[in-house]
Image (cartoon, rainbow, N blue to C red):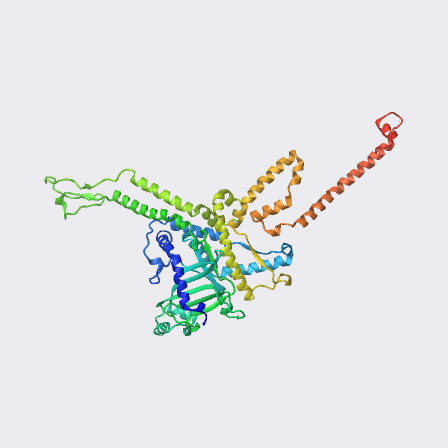
Length: 559
């Protein structure tokens, strides 16, 4: 590795630089882990299972709101239960060709099959939760010998990211711990350091070692080379303690033709690297809620079992707190005060605490869109995409618009494109017609949330059709202002009508013309019959007497 770009000195300096960018966010993330998502987040390289650490959570409302959002995003944006994406071609005319649509549909089914058999949906749901709670979720998609590909989502605190000049994530560094057996199983004993080999030989399979992984643009591409040095992106994996250069001192060195990562930042300010989401907005309420819940429990306990005061002579004497219990004392003693509470709870304290708790829970659920996502997560009706979501939660859908756009662009599109290319290179797609080769395939999203966003336009179209329909009864010429075929196409697309049940304009126009001609046939025959009868009557008419008919005939006919 003669190039300065491929040195551990540069890689470690880059790692520290990215840590400095991440540092201001760690304090907030740790608080979010404490009161919203206890089983997520790794902030120390040492320690045991993250789910076993102490937590400040005594009220589960924030965690349930986060869980509901995760389920709602999966159900609403990328549900494995129904089709949520379609492949299309930029060439509209080519898309009308039956063979092209058949080939694309066949590829959709292959991609859907491999998505379902892999860990894609599990990792995607985790990324949805990370983006909402911590502001950013990120992962990578690599090839897998059995499932064609495998998805890994990084935990907050164990990875760093950076962006290019357009604000898109193009760099992921990560520090994580792996056991002896995990490292040997993945990379092979010969690639591991002597320390790992010794642990393996001793049978210390669960000893942990810190591993660093870097995926970033290759700033020193070697043109013409087919190995990792000639790839636009490179990946380095090495043991933290191994600072020596040379390819043999890396656990893995490889490259990518395309960006292998995906990311989802719930919201991001211009110029920032890390995003923010509902978790940061709800953090204050979530922390306050835990305090309120704790104080409420204390108040109830003091009301049920208050602190007592008793005369001194009862010290070291048994006092019964059981229902019906008896405590004996000398009534003739000069200090014969009864046992009684030191103080009484103020009226309304419990009610005030309860009200505060309800208000905090309501604000948390509102920040997390719980009512909207709960509806999406608990319904299996496909019709939810168009009308009910739009009518009940139009305001929330508007605020979710930018989030859904980033979800489609940065997470789902990156993932589908990456997976599509992996499956294509593996030869898992059926052969396509020659006319489709080298053509660009695009993605159209057909999920519940995608259609619900479009349904806002469908409602206005319904009102327009109703208005023009009523108006045309008084002013028939208004109907010529409306292109009904285009309007029906737009409405069908907005509410998610399958393309297979819609005829194109040419077919619809031919059917309309045929129907019109069929209607004109009987009308023309009736008119011809009426004309013949009229001519017969005219031939038998008496023209000798003065009449309007005679006047017309004398004037030269009806013309």
